[in-house]
Image 1 (cartoon, rainbow over the protein chains, first blue to last red):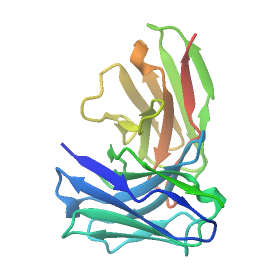
Image 2 (image 1 turned 180 degrees about the horizontal axis):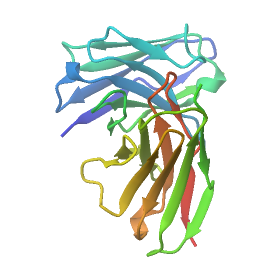
Image 3 (image 1 turned 180 degrees about the vertical axis):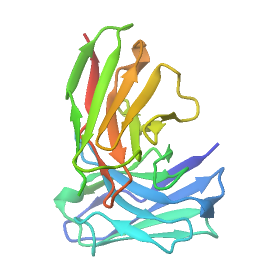
Length: 118
Length: 107
């Protein structure tokens, strides 16, 4: 059984930085692409970023490009999202997802809440 | 950016009824369209991938169809646990995008 567990979400001031982590188990970590998807309070789903299984390709939505950086550590079976220059519009639950084919979101973590406020 | 438009925004139905949800793409996504279900306080769950393939463990009452720009998720007979929000997502074009969601509520 695939398990994904996010951590790192907290209250941060505007302009601050945060690093989210997602530890995985139950799957061959390096085989599959992974993504971060966020959901602002009471809103729909928004794709944030994806990384290929081998970490050689990364993708970002326009609103976070240049501020966020996705990476993965195969030795730790862990996905990361480094978030800089945070603003109120980044307030959301951040979900870690793993693909089963291409860049689908076959498995999801429970999410971690990031709140950007002063 | 490929915009996905879901309709209706809200669907009010009774248990046992058939639900038909629509997702329209602003440009072709071939068959790279997935459907997700989200219940309050929970993470989304993959129901359907590549337009019509049910994910592991998804009941047969859920079916997907379509290709190109027009897609449909059908729930043949609603069970109480099916009342939730449903999202479509395309992965044919970057950036990946989600539709705005359809809420299926109890009538």
